[in-house]
Length: 202
Image: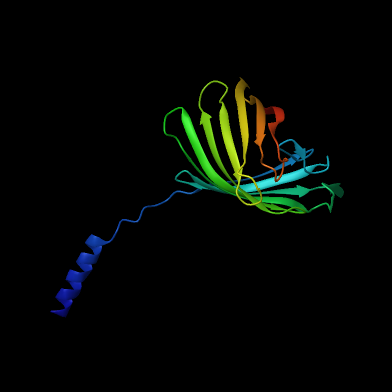
């Protein structure tokens, strides 16, 4: 009787056990060398070279990213002494990206900025990107930690990748930003903030 009961209970558990879904996680790591660190038009490395690297983990549209900026020379940056090898900034980003249509992708997320020589802060963002000619995108940032005003920072960009040959892809792009009273990093004003042009090869 006991054996029969055990068999029945085992059968019920097997039938009712939930099917465990396997979540595929993709990841990548990278490291780059730049002649300086520019962020929203500001030189955050004192004009000296930096090493930047990070790790991304993605699954089901969610991405967790770790990124850091490392100084390569002793210098004074924004009034603070920094030494070669110092990690002057580390960012943790949590992002969710989805595509409501074939041509439109939407990204929402938050960024935690851990800064050396300045107050740490956090931003939430919303990004829209079109998969069409020039690949236009619009991103809105809101600092919900250090900013005193209910302010936003806007960034609009376009870009295009051109396949020169089987071994070379040329990427060109431009960006313009607008500051709307987001006073923590860029100042308490409402006006166009910075313009950027970029060219890259892969």
